[in-house]
Image (cartoon, rainbow, N blue to C red; front, side, top):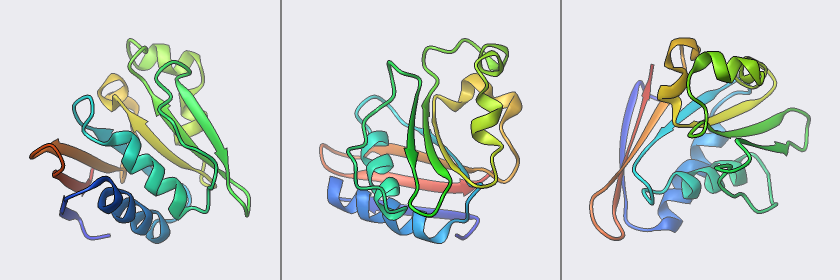
Length: 144
């Protein structure tokens, strides 16, 4: 992935395809932060990313569970975290967030990353999804 990529998606299918391609290019240990308003497409992006890693089970938002774990076919996991209910990095560390974002064999997708901005690893990829219209989204991916 380049240092910064901007993609205009015109549908959920295009967002999923973009995320699927990205997942196939990134190595295990990758951490992606997902920013965007409610309904922007963070879960749609996550579904495509999971598909790119070979995950076929349904992918849903972990808003109420904080984390969803998806095993990968060749070992490792995809961790999808929603930190909306977490107050700060101390609270996140208390439930072991570092185990999910520091595992070199796994991938992590993190929603509401600002809650733990002080402990996010360097080299992570910031994914910002912005509404352009009812169907269009601007997806900006940048190494942090």
